[in-house]
Length: 198
Image 1 (cartoon, rainbow, N blue to C red):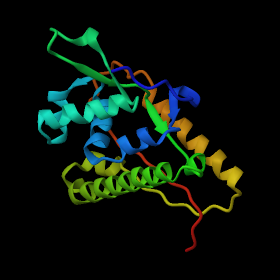
Image 2 (spheres, helix red, strand yellow):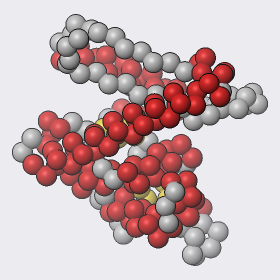
Image 3 (cartoon, one colour):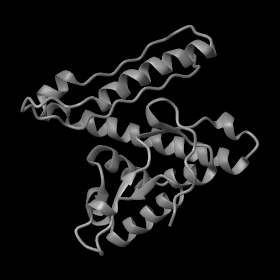
């Protein structure tokens, strides 16, 4: 099936999601994990994604079809060893969206909230898992960080802060890895900024 027409891209290929179908596709825990696996591991087959995310191959194939129909993944036929093997990759290296873009579409706003809630839940679960196991990997425990800062800014200034943080993370995420023999792990870094009171 042909993916939907590409949506606008922000800098460095980060896609701005502008339709409810893509948001709804991302608001599923297995599909979200599959997209994370494709981001970390690169192109993959349904079998490998099923093993990586703890689901049946048939279920992984179904979720890949949904992601494909939403224009979030595409087949990579040149990687297949034979006609039965199907490889998939992300269409874009990253996604972003704003609920304000969907103000007139109740279904899209609902999908945006669901996708955001899933993301926050998964971030929280990952932090809990890390905290429970950090002592078993002292070098990483010493390198891991958490930060919380209170700022006094306007909405425009908060957008500037967000752009600077995103630029740093995109630069590190896309840098060419040195051929220095060092073993590198996948690392999750997330940040949020929003109005709140102490």
